[in-house]
Image 1 (cartoon, rainbow, N blue to C red):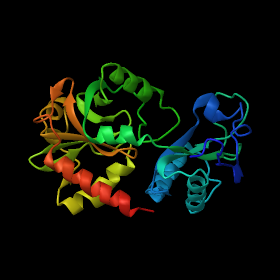
Image 2 (image 1 turned 30 degrees about the vertical axis):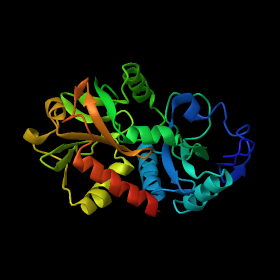
Image 3 (image 1 turned 120 degrees about the horizontal axis):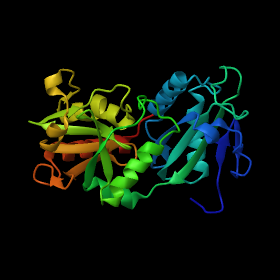
Length: 294
């Protein structure tokens, strides 16, 4: 991306500077009152944008934020922002806040404020992505976040602080455990492999239904001929013990796709190398990424 060129979208208009975008009274700034999406750009185009927009609208509905831009409009907006900013490998940030108003510690009525919508682009650190795809270490952490982790809101401070604590220990990420049950990592979903079958925690309000997670279920695993299970029976749930005894463990997120976990809390996962199932998923996910997905 050229350093002297930036194009952003804000409330139905395109700008060439962030100078007049942020309002000090915006509730996103004051309270984190909004939601967002992080969208991968590959070969100059947004990847799985429709999936992200669907999830954004779900977050908006749960937060009671009304829509002021139709979902199908976002396709052209994101393509323009990626092209204008000369992004080949990067990401787009889509932010929607409830709007600007007085510092009132309540939720205004649905029509009281006009929501603000921002889209901008940044280049991706591809070297960091490639390094993560070669395998990472993780640590476990108690999941003490609020009970609505299925909303990708602007309130991500607990996740950020828990990941920072993990990084101080030399780990890539922290894996959350709530009441001895594994939920997800701070910015990734988590899967384990046992007897060639993939297991992951059932999506509920305690974890985010990640886009890459969805693609593992619907597109990647089927092409690999691998079964994915979301256990519901108590004796099959992913406990800390089952996590630590798994044959393979991997994370998924929109940034790096499928990320092998080679050790947890200093103990190797399996033989400490990328497992066959994980490697197969990585290969097929890369094919999907190269093919593109609207």
